[in-house]
Length: 183
Image (cartoon, rainbow, N blue to C red; front, side, top):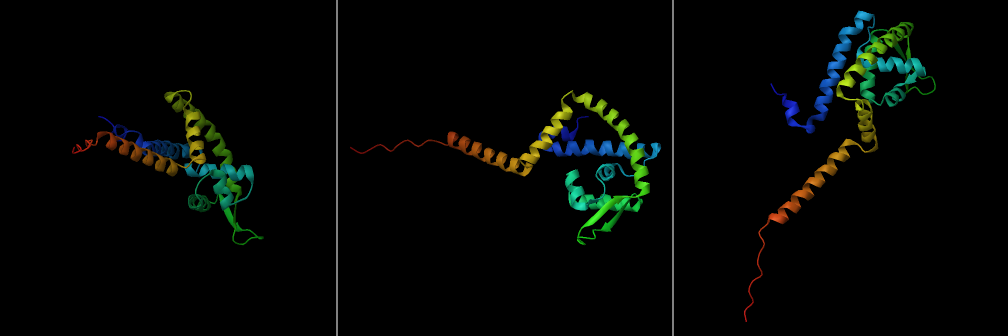
């Protein structure tokens, strides 16, 4: 049976990447508890960032992870519910929320780092299926979207398509012969 999305072509790149990401996250969600990791897979980058950079404001954390502020807030709520992080108001700027690891969060990071080594090994095997340059190619695409957002690329491709259609229309339009002059 053919894959419907694959048959649709590269316009569905985001769908393919999301499908792949969902598979990786689901696999991790099933496996992590077997090695003692309780944090949801998508939140591990938050724990590691807090471990490496100390308490951070939500905006700083979102910027460091290059994720949206609302998404990082969701992750912080999940980690707070598990008592892995705590949030406090910044004493200098009460509008700013500071997030820090709890003692349980620091213990979780130790287990998570060991699990992430296994995750890296399994991911290298998966990347090898696609060829040696796949990892670098994905990062090149991500960097390209930071340099020129995808919405700009969509607008440019649409304009290019419109220009091509106009040229094609002009090339196929019936040509009128000049009217014969009366003598």
